[in-house]
Length: 173
Ligand code: TQI
Ligand code: CA
Ligand code: ZN
Ligand code: ZN
Image 1: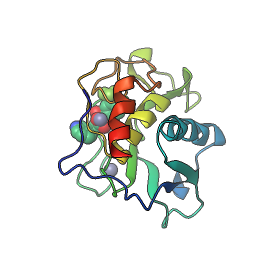
Image 2: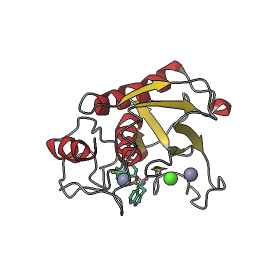
Image 3: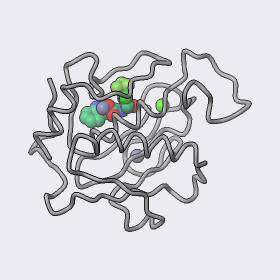
Image 4: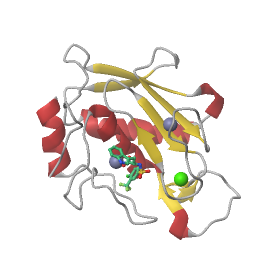
């Protein structure tokens, strides 16, 4: 079953059109950006919310960046595996991904020429859909095939919202 953060934080009802931006220093490719766009779309299909990319990192509601190790928010990343990403509950909007993961998009590594075991491959879209759930106010779910279930087998892709995820987010929005 779905859960919320303590106090059930959510984006205010007056703010249904959310903007997101990518940390300019990351210099992400269009392919990587399109993964996030698809991940946002899955949540906008089942809520009144819309998500659009803005060029202004400072003013964006949701700020997406890849960071390695300590990045000065008290929650350092830990190299390959372990913590993959973290996002803060509304209206925080910080969405950080561990730059040391072996991220893959449709099974293809983001970093060409970087060879690694498929056992350490992490599907970017799966993690993005999960973290956006947190950004919207969902905690973890006990339903095993839900997006908000707190574990994912290595190399696995899980991007379709389960009924449990939809019911949870529709309680909030
Ligand atoms: N990152 C954790 C997560 O997003 C951070 C976290 C731990 C957390 N406890 C929390 C966030 C409680 C909110 C509330 O869940 S993670 C997965 C999954 C992670 C894990 O790196 O462990 C995904 C990030 F589900 F695969 F295990 C994304 Cl999809
Ligand atoms: Ca890690
Ligand atoms: Zn962080
Ligand atoms: Zn989580």
